[in-house]
Every structure is written in C-alpha cells, then in structure tokens.
Length: 72
Image 1 (cartoon, helix red, strand yellow):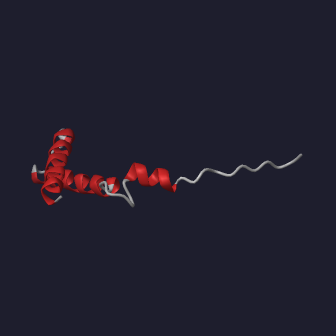
Image 2 (cartoon, rainbow, N blue to C red):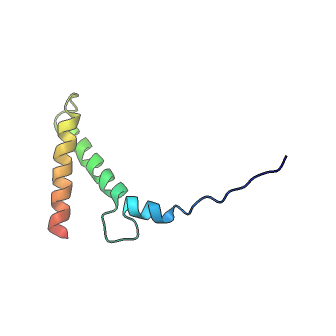
Image 3 (cartoon, one colour):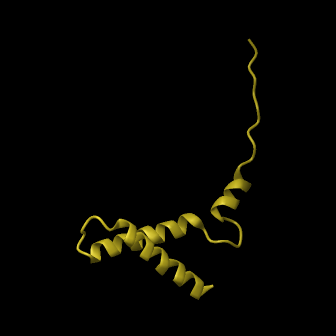
C-alpha cells in the first residue's frame, strides 16, 4: 500500500485576512478580549447579577468601538 501525501495550503494569508493581523484592519482577537473584559466589568458593576449578559456585551461593544473610532 502506498502512502499518499498532500501538501496543505498555506493558511497564514487566510488568518491575516480573517483576524486582521499584519494589515491595516483591527486585530479581532484583541478587540474581542477588550469587549469581553469590559462586559465582565459591567457585570461586576451591577453586583454580579445574572441574566443581562447580552446587554453587558452590547454596551461593551459600543464603548470599545467608540473608543477605537476616536483614536483612529
């Protein structure tokens, strides 16, 4: 039985396009981390009460993206 090998396509270009690394766009994992951290802060500010994670996330997105547009 012969062993077949295939070369996998180079994915670094795809990763750069998706995640914004190495280009002019935002670094998506960084932004996601900032939003998650801010959403958690909002959760804690509300006394760590469950049930409003979506509201916290959306508010955190507005704040983070608002800060980015002011600094760009």
